[in-house]
Amino acid sequence: MWTNKQLSEEIIDRAYMEKYWDGRPYYALHAWLRQTFGTKVYKLALDAGMSCPNRDGRVGYGGCIFCSAGGSGDFAQGQMEEAKKLVSRKIPSGGPFIAYFQSFTNTYAPVSRLQAIFSAAMTPPEIAALSIATRPDCLEPEKIRLLKELNLQKPVWVELGLQTIHPKTAAFIRRGYDLSCFEDAVRQLKAAGLTVIVHLILGLPGETKDQMLQSVDYIAHFTPAIDGIKLQLLHVLKETDLAAIYNREPFPVFSLEEYADFVVTCLEHLPPSMVIHRLTGDGPKKLLLAPTWSADKKRVLNTITRRLHERNSWQGKAYS
Image (cartoon, rainbow, N blue to C red; front, side, top):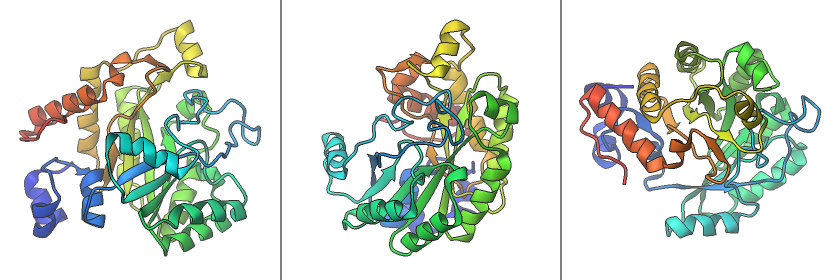
């Protein structure tokens, strides 16, 4: 995270400052989108109908213990027009959009199928970019070559769910790959010129705040530089293996104030050039078991804003 002085002198030129920056002391996704595309850009959460090697037996069964039946894509739609309708209920807009393949592992298919799905998604003129959530163990060289080719047409982002750098926690959540696999994938993606975004979960059972910060620091200092990060509050969702553990023996979860304070600490550890894609995350209210306060996203973001103001003398506006 940066000071206003660092931002104006070192990171963003005056034209950007005047047109896009909202004064937040971190590089927010919406500011980066405005800088890149010159306007607001909205995400269309899509479901390509793929599975996951951590569910079908190639790596394991049942998936990661926190993952719902929707494969972390509970709001994703099967068809682009359906996703547009869902967005239009909240934000009347004809685009531009990011086609975001969110559910399960979106490179877990033959290259021919991936090419057909992604090419079709990128064709509409209102689609500005393609974002693909996947696993590092499902990025074979031929798939990276395909993504590199698509990236010549429109920007392609690859989102990797690392969650933690700690082997004990990774085994507990049944992630199914080791850290070296992640490192190899990131380096190959960056060598291909692709944008890489990494997901971390804050609040995984058994991890201390120091351990969580070690994961943040790892991402902050990774070489080559990672482009963006999503900080995800751990959601305990009903009908998951994590919920069964929580019901049997409840483990501590963040309070709202604790989480807001810790997110600000995480931001202080990240480089100014890294785009912050997420500060909390959404969990389906009908499935959310804990922490229940996280269902009120506006309140969560406003609390984080307040903590930023208190710790950085930042005259920011609350979310509305």
